Amino acid sequence: MNARFLRRVLMLLATILLVHAAAFFLMRTTRGGPFDEARALDPQVKLALEQRYGLDDSLAVQYWHALTGLWQGDFGPSLRYREVSVADLLADALPVSFAVGGGALLWGLLFGIPLGMIAAGARRRLLGQSATTLATVLLALPNFVLAGAAIALFSFTLGWLPPAGTGGLAHLFLPSLCLGLPLAAQISLLVRDAASERWQSAGVRHARALGLSGQRLWWAHILKPSLTPVLAFLGPATAAVLTGSLVIERIFALPGLGTFFVEAALNRDYTLALGVTVVYTALLGLATFLADVLLMKLDPRVEALS
Amino acid sequence: MSLWAKRLAWGFLAALTIAAVVAPWLPIVDYRAMDADARLLPPGSEGHLLGTDAQGRDLLARLLFGARISLLVGAVGTLVAMLIGLPYGAVAGLRGGRIDRFLMRLADALESVPMVVMVLFLLSILREYRVEMEVIGFGRLQLFLVAIGFLFWLPTARVARAESLRISRLPFVTAARLQGMSTRAQLRRHILPNLWPTLRVMWLLTIPRVILMEAFLSFLGLGVEAPAVSWGGLASDGLAAMNPLVASWWLLALPSAALVLTLLALQQVGRGEDGST
Image 1 (cartoon, chains in turn orange, purple):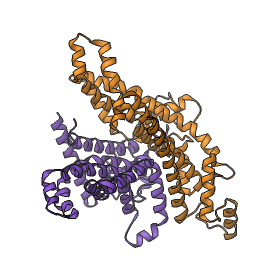
Image 2 (cartoon, chains in turn blue, purple):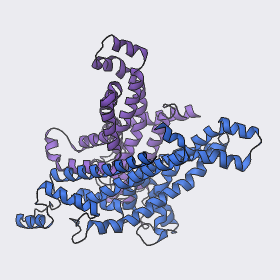
Image 3 (cartoon, rainbow over the protein chains, first blue to last red):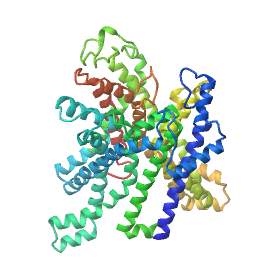
């Protein structure tokens, strides 16, 4: 376990370094730079700017700076947002993204698990079948469609919730919900399949033959083992949240990581784009890592198999 | 029930595809034509069955031409992904050993890069080289197709590897190998033809994901460029036009509906094909 653990941590660090290096060299060696605008800058001004940000050094020197900066958590100054450091921008944006993304995962679990259990428990009845249908339909709804419908209904028609911006929990409600519902659909299908399988398993049949029924059967013998696939889904779910947050943050005008990232990549804001890339890769890697460790703790067979 | 839903889904997709293909010859208004006198008409207006947008462009025509882009990207983008993933996975599975380990390690590494990072880098770099690409006949759309293919080849490669590993251990392939058949000939004669059924399923399952990705990118303004339209871009415009004062709901609702119905239909069509329910 410990050796495996250590290997995973090392792999995660190696991945971050590799992605960092790949992103760095891809951005620097391709044409176009942060100071290319529609109106060309005076060459001297451009040179002065490049000197100021150290962009006139050789690539190796620049990479060395980026690498030492990465170690210290310092990504340098943003090239577009003048006079602001990337670390500060990230520190401002991360809480927003965390709140929305974490909220989305929470919604996903909160709706997904009961929906899946209903679909499995009542699969021969209309209730269970409608639960499955609901999940299938939700699965085909892109985030922005959900968001548009939610804003039209809750903000414009009913006037219950703010349509955009920040400032408290009410502002996070709709974004996290729209980001979380597609996750709930996927989680519910995972739970449904796992629970249906458990229902037909020898263990549950035996428990029922011994007279076990009702709550104890469902909670201890069906629900609990059915949550393993949900845990394994944590990695893909994080990836989905990262992708979806780009759209959701734009629609709800939230100053999160996604908003900065799209702008940074298009404006060739090297330092900011690199910073967000590293944060995203680390987040995804950590989520996958966490899921694996928890899975191994819960189900020793996973460790034995791998 | 299931069979009925599947037939309905096939019918819908077939009708949509035909409509998209013949759209340029249909007696509809030009989808780019603006009309200052016919701005923001609701559906059911005279001459504009599904209404118009803020520039007075006919929404029905825009949806039909959007379908062309969305379906094309879905079908061709997936094909590109298969063309990359299939040989990659097949070689890994058939050769095994060190080559297999190396190829799969590389795939693991690529998989740990968040897709958004990959997408944004790919598109922002392709943007810079647009002029050169156009010289060799690569417009924005073709670039986009390649980028999409590049994003989605990994699952295909994994499936192709697992399948070719299984097939290469079947007795008839072992016999061929023992008789001295070269790897390349094995690949061509035995592995690839037997991968076909699996691939058909993979193709069906990947198309909706690709269409969704295209809509997502067009929504962010990174997809196809005006005057071309796609459903994601239309929905994005619709959302931007939405405010509490002007109730132009159809600009968001109709493109969204087109997208969701198509995704649902594709989901139905792919359902059960992979052995699940």
